[in-house]
Length: 82
Image (tube, rainbow, N blue to C red):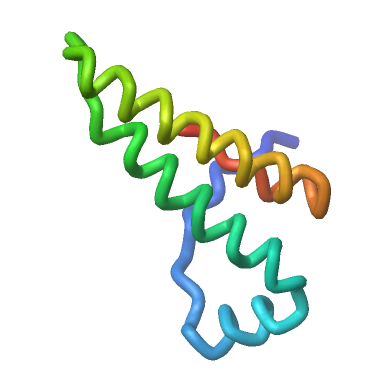
């Protein structure tokens, strides 16, 4: 049996709010910060100037901090910049 690739399906806002109400506030905040930091990391493209390199490293550090909280709660929530 082969595993099929799952297609991400958007969930309704009410369902997302219900899921979020079951999680601690710190984890929800870390999830938001991780998504923003991962998006910011992807906005920088090589070659980097000094300011871009510093901003990218700051975004990577923010992503690492958020992932530390997410990983402690549930390792499946950790985000990677793609």
